[in-house]
Length: 400
Image 1 (cartoon, rainbow, N blue to C red):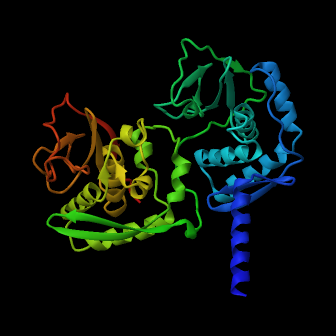
Image 2: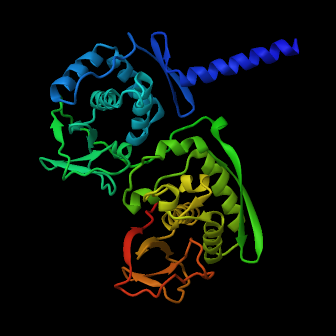
Image 3: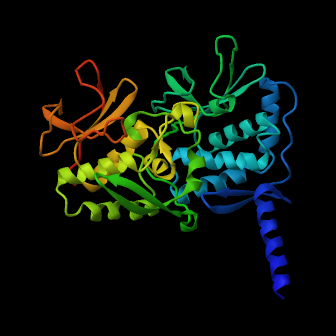
């Protein structure tokens, strides 16, 4: 009996894994998204893109996919977006997963990209396809400020490239000319890269992570809930301005495991000492590494990604420290950039030496990144002069 049960469980697990990897299940495709399983009906397996890259061939392929029940699939995607209250970027990850399920990116990149274009268009956005002799780029109209992606300005409307990463962030637009494929239907909806809410994963996706850090002369510990399956949803997330990066919220489970615990840790401390505690927590809870060493490029992590990852840099820690101070004390703050460094200064009731004056108020630097020398509150890696730093973001709490 036990042997039979083991064999049954083995084959059940094998079939489950196979279902995740094998996208086509008879007349349907299977998509795993934010820890949930979705099946979408299709008329048949999507055919491969045929011929060279041209407007004519792309138009023919679009006619083909429109007869393959993709409109019904798109209606289901839009309903999921509504039910899960998905921000545009997270919804785009659903589009990517669905397109991959229809036709694998590794097998037919052109068809996969056109599928993404189709779902974006039918979902109410304004996407744009551009082609060279060998490459296809997917853009979407957006008003956001994006720093590490190609941008097209068409009739004073900005389009941001969504698949630049597929070409390893290297394209020579001078030597390789791209032409626009005319879109069929223009919309008024702009795609936003801003994250106002993280997707609601099932609690089973969360793991307990022990964070050990030095607070002055003793060791302290925290056990928090983190969700490693969130990370792939931000693998190709673009570099935005500091206001947007710093204000990406925590998920409900991570928030509830971290913020109340830190409030309890700082409950008996003065505001100044409490902010100092958060500074030491952010400084010593993670290993330091530059983006170029971890990712091979600049990448700004959200606060939750910093909690998940073992290594992070100054921008990532500054975002996490900012979020902790905002959630626990809700104090005014400024984000300061120096050559090759980012840090945060907080408006405290005690003015420290070397405080930075901004709009008539003094802000104390709270360095959240480890340095060769252990820095106290008010100290930073360099002597600040008006020409040596920039204030790139100011947070002013609103009255509730």
